[in-house]
Image 1 (tube, rainbow, N blue to C red):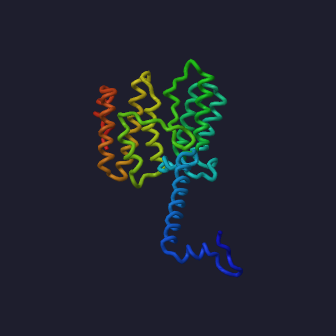
Image 2: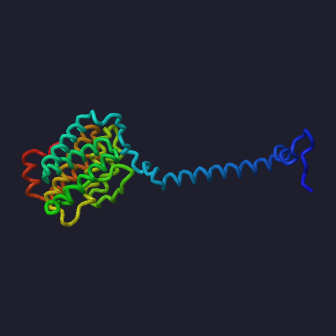
Image 3: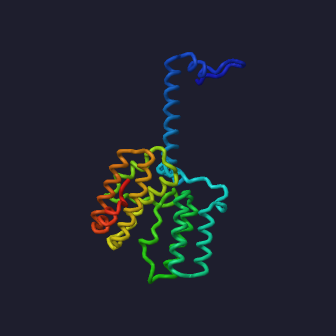
Length: 247
């Protein structure tokens, strides 16, 4: 027959648990396991859910901009938009795209990525014969888009760029973008476009090196220079003789 709680007294089950060290330890251990399991499930859920993707890109945390309309870059971008709406030309839309993309690199806000993607889509619709995919690449820098795998030639550079200390957020974002852009290229991408992208990556890495004098970054710079030379030796040697690649 189950134990009954005497009037005004302590429940016999509670008393037994509280006074028996072995039983008390058993309940305590099970409670700890349960709490730990719940905690791990919550962490797993957050890590797999869209809201938790920021843990994968916390080095690219978006910049909080209270009043972006007052920034200099925002004003220039707005002027580029007005010009594109007025001119209705391929070049005007391309300039607008580049200014919007720069704004996205600056703060990493998903709404700015959406602006860039819309401009790219509008340009493709309006100028189908002139449109080139490689001229309208928007590397993902926020948690609302898909991050593509780094191409083999530069994938080893990415961890150094992500972990280097003392780097401004906008420079890090731009540098990550200059690494990710290669994942959007195809075999049909012109060599000149590839070379220009390597050149941009080179200058971003030089900015890193000038800040921290990291030997890892220096090795990365030399790797990029070799890629530039391989992709277009004549162009590389021409600019190298002019001292463009000294750092």
